[in-house]
Length: 310
Image (cartoon, rainbow, N blue to C red; front, side, top):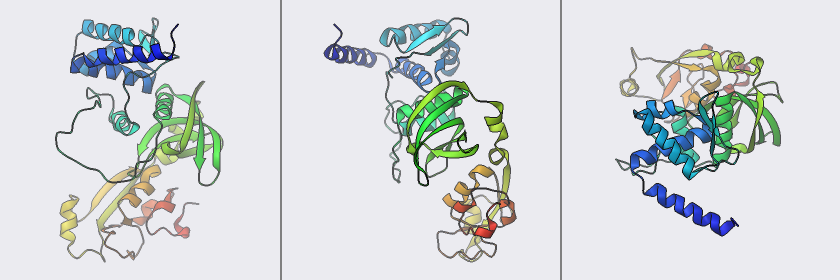
């Protein structure tokens, strides 16, 4: 009988076997594991192209992975791909904070394994709790263009259940969120990953009306002209050099859906008369008229109600 004790022994044997492999092969197995968990599928060609190996070597990697975790994948002959198994259990555990930059940067040949940093470094901030399972389901929903049901805590509504059509993960400098069409409100919203307490991927495909193509705020590009703050900066040439400004102006293009986050993160004074005081306001938005129609202006430093999008 395969009881809990046997299961633990089996896992220990698998861990020992993985540790006995060479680093290059462990990296490729981790890649297979991550692709399955966060996209729901992986092809042999993915391994060949990402790690510049022969097809025969990739075939051996899949055979070994299946030996280590037979319930984690099955082969779809018609599509010539491996798909995530119903009883998938990851061979490699990573923190969501490790996975998110990997997802955002694309699936390259650098897998976030547990290596020591080349240069000592520290980061500051408060870690928000993100569920690895939630992240995996949201990620697979984006990849497969499927509706995801989430249990979500918001400041305005408390705990609610939503059906969303996710299409992109966003790091706004303060948190990670998923941009998605929300069926409850019939519009596009940002859902903080740390506030999603549960998620379930459905087999329901996203409809054309719910796709990112109809998200006006996402598809609209806003051009912002940033200059050294006229009142708070005594030596504007320092700011011009720091930001690589041309003729005293840093011109940047950003999606309307991200404008509020961007301006808040960099403490950019958006008042028409550059009236915000304080050393934290080193930049001023010269062309505040560019904010017309941006929906998340409530986040913007110097925002006033009469400038809010109607």
